[in-house]
Image 1 (spheres, rainbow, N blue to C red):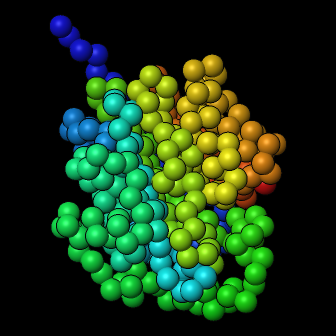
Image 2 (cartoon, protein in one colour; image 1 turned 45 degrees about the horizontal axis):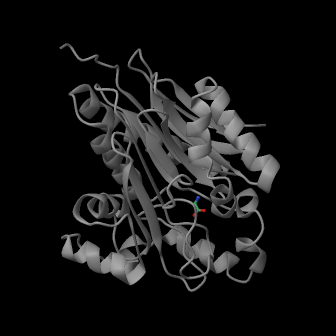
Length: 307
Ligand code: GLY
């Protein structure tokens, strides 16, 4: 029997927030590089699951983004990372939260999915698992950048920073990737350092299935970014995936953001791919850094301005 072959798709984001003009070039270059370096793997017949892990690893390594190296510091000046990866074929997912001293939480999340009977590991237990799985444990300074240290000094006396719409005033640079491979399989990965000045142990939407990410071959796949406390309340990624069944891809993404804003006064963005391989994106923050592979082979990268 001849199986249908799909034209592979890949879309990534580098966060939805009020990205200052001085950071635009680095954001555009970062999301473009993630697509350009990952897409050939999909063209060669690689899996969507490998592609989203690869793209997110590239973004985690880039100090521009609040994920892996370059992540925000929490209220006591430490980096705690969250990540999730989900396979649309089986609905299997793995996630980690409040993980320290590891550059690629997305890959630890994948190992949680593949090597354990669990879905989500947190804190010291997640770090212990990562060590046993062979991930190099870094010194805390290895994930720290000069920019984040300066930012931490600037905001550490500002109690409002973590409590009210941090994404209006300050950064929220989660990264994410959604892919469809030649077999039509969908996958998603999302990774973040969370919000600046968060309480130690705070976990946002990113590693919560249906909130920071969702993938189901029968619905579509979505990665979310933005103010985690609001995104969790409406399970934004699952909401958009469910809406793919009823509306065109872009309309479904806009609907998800409309629900986020109307029901919980939330701020954020989504990227996704529906089962027909159509891209979707929407955000209600001033900017969202994103890039995708167009059918004509051109990589489209943008920091969309909602005006
Ligand atoms: N969306 C990332 C966070 O709130 O942690």
